[in-house]
Image (cartoon, rainbow, N blue to C red; front, side):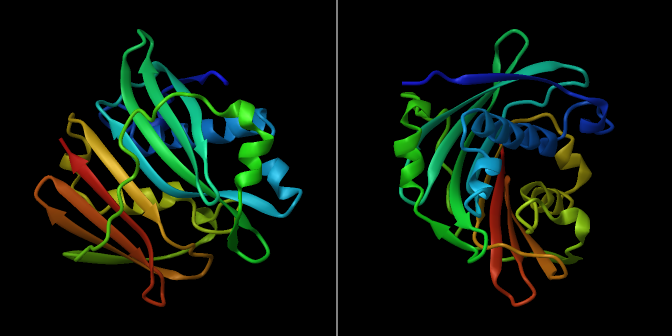
Amino acid sequence: MAEKSVYNFRVEPQQVDFTLRATITSMIEAVLNTAGIDAHGKGFGVDALNADNHSWVLSRMAVELDRLPAQYAPYAVATWISDYGRVLSTRNFTLADAEGRIFGRAVTQWAMIDLAKRTAVDLSWVGRAHSEAIVDAPSPADKPRKIREVTPMRMWEHRVVYSDIDFNRHVNTLRYIEMMLDMLPVEKLTCERPMRLDAHFLHETRFGQTLRIGCEERGETDLFEVKDDGGVAAVRACIEWK
């Protein structure tokens, strides 16, 4: 069995807001970048999959942050794969400060798609071919929860432009998160308290589409839904403030 991989980062000035603490989005970005770095190093990154016209896509994600580190603070992200299924692979993360204190946890579930057909493919072969990458350790948090219904209290529209698109030619995960967070009061985003974000990516949206982002407040939980210009839900998410 493999060991957890650890990668070192630092909170850079472009990753903080006016409180001089890292933004939620920048911590999620570090998690997703770590996934890509680790997969590439182990031989099943996007570059390797592209040779067969395949790619990784994020299906579900849960991120827990107890606090946000300050500008220039060093931190480490540990990552490990706990299982491969036929449809989804589970990759886990912990974020720790320079003293080794864990301040964040994440559980992500990934699918593989055929870039020509834009459909999911069986990824069991990855688990067989790279069984040495599986770590015998549990996820550090509950797996991503499904959000089945959102009744928006307010809405706004966003036309998908070039800067929203990633290497898979659809809207980047972080752009969805930014769209959702931008609907919240700045006081909520800059308060110092733990939070958990769950996101479920239902189908892709692409350049030129007009998205409708809805937000519903339920006490200490904010729920979000992003629909494409055909009215189909593309993403549902929730943030629980603790």
